[in-house]
Length: 257
Length: 259
Image 1 (cartoon, rainbow over the protein chains, first blue to last red):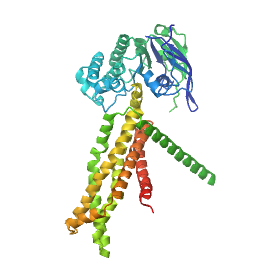
Image 2 (cartoon, one colour):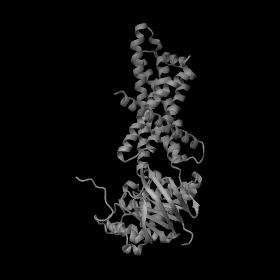
Image 3 (cartoon, each protein chain N blue to C red):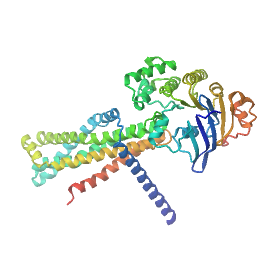
Image 4 (cartoon, chains in turn yellow, blue):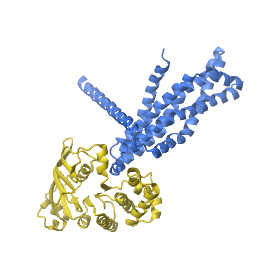
């Protein structure tokens, strides 16, 4: 593999006695789309937040373009953040701002782009996710869940980032809208030539948007490989997960009624 | 029996000290950020409108009725000693030194402190604060600092308005109900009023503005969980701001007027 865009070595994170990440090693090449799958509570979101610097790992190394990011100061962190775009699970749109202001937030507040120019950028990005300019005048609370996801995607790509994170991009959407979002993700990542990391438990989404898949279980990356090989991984945990079977090595902690 | 009691007391003391440390660190960080660019002027102006302009009706109503009641109550007491002429003095000193800043502070704490904690708390639990970070915007500078600056600037203005409206309330009751001569009432008011009375009230207001916004932001910013966490943050913001207002009111009064 050429010099990786993102590399993690021995990343651990615990909350009190609960060890959420237990020595994650992962390398993602530039332009690659990596999907991390795993059940609820296996540490997927924590992994994403550690890479983004929203959480500090207890140990290990996280490098972006070869630069160590675990010990960055505020200004350096802001500089590295310029490379990232994030689509949050719930959209995380700013509900006090109009849709176009949400999309133009990064260009205006962080890049100092003039408002008129940023408004045009917002209209173009909304167009890229299939929304007309009239949507820009609405507030997020006036949109459906699918439209909010599209706006959040438009905001994530507004600064043309080098790396895009997708946190459960299809959760809460109907299957058709989920597929629309998947198509948009594939198109946006391709058009930008970006590196993408997605976390999901939606296998249809994982198969569509990923080049490579890794499975996180009990804080460890227990399998990773090309998306085409996931059906013959030879890993019982992966098999159980991708087929959604209750029986298998993964035991859900469910209290008996 | 006494050991569990001591354990509980010890835990409560530790939790209290931890909370003080946490709030102090938050306040210190906020002050340090407030003196460094960039400043989000649009956000500061928006907060000045939220805290100041939209609080005017509630603060004005509180002030006018307080001034009116003060004049009436003073009259019932002072009439026994034939000291009715002191009513304008009592009204103006009480309002400018104490009731103006304290009542305005408590009203703003209830209205604005709660709203701030709810707004920032909701942003926290819906990942909007994380989203700010990923957009290379420091959420502390964007959310907390403008509110603190707006609180410190706006509360003194609100209190000045409350002082004037409260004195007007006392004047209306004095002239139209207690049959004071209007010119004499005004002359007594102005003769007795000193710069220090107003100044101490404005200093209190600036401190209260800082405390209200600090508590609103702190409890919102550190809220956890979902709706329950936001609800708790809102309650804590109002209660802690109200207690701090009354506590700091005593110490500022002592600093200005103790002999």
